[in-house]
Length: 314
Image (cartoon, rainbow, N blue to C red):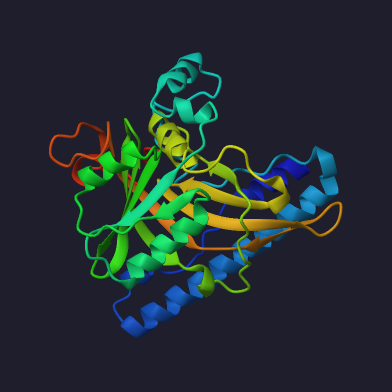
């Protein structure tokens, strides 16, 4: 037997012998046996990991690559809309879409507002957005209809409108409308953590941040990523060492804001500036906001789309 055989043996999950807990009628005895088997299984897995690590250290460069972990992300159902970065058709479409002028160097001019008659918590989140988007400014809603605000924003050469919606006195939704021709995206907001709630958070500067977009693979994901990217200037101030990250995982978009610090020539540290929140796409609409007659490019329908936990759209 060689080292490769040993690696294969240790990669198999051990089966804990003993009675099946569900077949035991006594509740107390069933619980004890279940806990005992659970601890034994955890112990066996730890021993297997230790053995595999020692084998890799002995083999060095000749050690076989570790088996990839099976996760919902790695076992996702194939999506025919996944984009090849070198696809010329996709590149041509992006050169002609509504966001093309921005990526040619047009600086963003973002206006942030809220739903009608908001409460303090919604204002607080809107203030965080003002600190995130470098060229954004806040305009109170004051009972105006959204279409009227869009018209006024276009006349004043704004490039994007961001609207914070609330439910039960908490921010729960985010509308992003690219001006003047759309598209319009609606997101659900969750897991908000304001910058003051983050331990050892840093203080934001006026430098324009770098933007990192992770795991936006499909055509829909590319469009959503470009919409998000269009909210930030394309010429970041690198001396500020600040970076905003939108990380897509299982169609949940996690937002983080950091400053990186060079500890020495080899090590780099991160200081979180905040806030944190998570976005979930609900719809993507052609053109500007129109709740009655708008044409949807994509609309989340749970009963039709949530057919598998391994099916993702971004």
